[in-house]
Length: 327
Length: 306
Image (cartoon, rainbow over all chains, first blue to last red; front, side, top):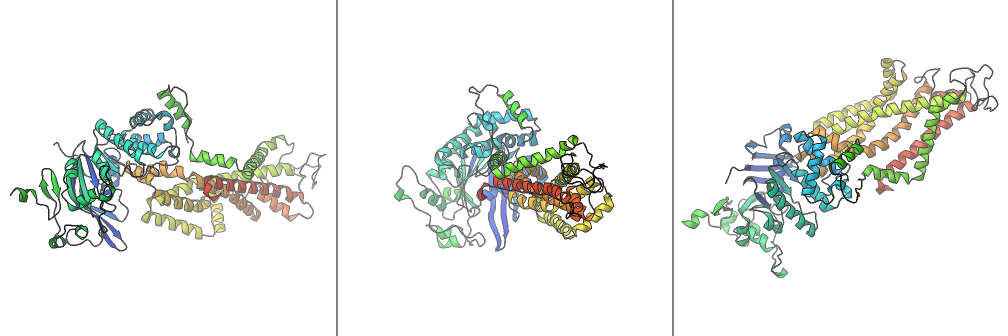
């Protein structure tokens, strides 16, 4: 595999709150290759969004990121905002969750789209307009010319999400982060948007990070999946392997709780209990309290993320590591 | 939106053939608000009345055979009278009241516009920067506003008079420079809530610098509140000007303003009521129409409250 386009080393995100410090992301290591699609899966509050907000320098005021987030050899976390502005929108861009609020209500679509081009590439208005129109066409907006002149409130939710995607792709970023891009859309539109992502990433050879809690989304689109729980990666695997043979008990539970067309509704098993309080993480495995397989050692020892098979890692004491398995 | 027509033409040139020729133009929130505004009868009538008043005060003096400062030696203290052509009568010095009232209206309006413009420019810039940057910058900037608020207003005006002399325009640029305080507070508050919206986050993610975000994303969203507040500022400044002129700080003879005229008329209202009545009528009409327009705009920009 070629050089990674993005790499995070020991990425940690902390928030200072009145009730004490909250550690939203703890020591995250992940790598993304050019053109690859990586999915980050986890429940609400597992730190999946905060990871990438910290990379983009968009953490809330009380948030602090430490560790490294390296995009093509440059650490984004140590950059001053002014420096970061050069890369944000050009090499790394983001599609937000809610297309209803993600567009400026008082600016025409044309103006919002061409903005990044004018800022990053110094395009003239005419060039920018031409590029933006072509991009609207590419994201499958019918009659782009007339939409181009409209205001966001005149477009439907799916249409707006397409506009946001077009906006993120205009400078042909090397890494596109999609933060729950389909959560606010209805199911039929969801499928269309996912299809669109699949097309676009091939066309522009953009690496895609898909942040989602929806395993259905993951199955169709991702190459590799990171499962996060309580701010840590608990399992990493190629997507087919993950669905076929989940190793970590949390992944198993997550899959068992996801409705599928080929199983009965009765066979759905909710995960008992709630995610742990991030202020007071347990000493051992964070999932131990909810885990059906937990043993005494699970509550004492924090499992490390170990390789368990070819291109797979898992953080569970009960899953034999690769060396142990082969030994 | 600036240059919107030009850009539409550009887009047409880029993609000339689109079959049916159906290319609806987008309608902005401001345009929607204007449509609602036009449905408000009181506000609409007020716009026409105010428009007529402005028009008359601008072109009226050209049709009056009397200057605002030239005494008519044949008519002193003349009540309104059609035969002599002094429709509003004359004052103690034989000057035509119609000419003087129209001139006064001109001066009052100009002063109000200049001061409001100054207050908008300073207030919006200051308020949006304070609100967007937040934190310590915001605290320092707003404490400065608080201090300015605490200074007695009249003291300030007298200070400005010392600096600017008796130049009316400069004086009212100065008044605008005091008026901006409230504007800055309103704009800051609005910016604070805008800043948390997701499209600002998206703009940051797109690599826009803070001042680009303020100019391109915050400012256009401030149109509503700023326009509304401006329509409320205009009458406030007219009243301020009248008050200052009444005290003798404002416009100097022979130039006049509505406030000066009212002040002079009030002294003699028992013997020559027309000297008070006409300028007062003009002032009241102006203030009322502006109030209705401001009200209409507020309803139009914030339809939830209707």
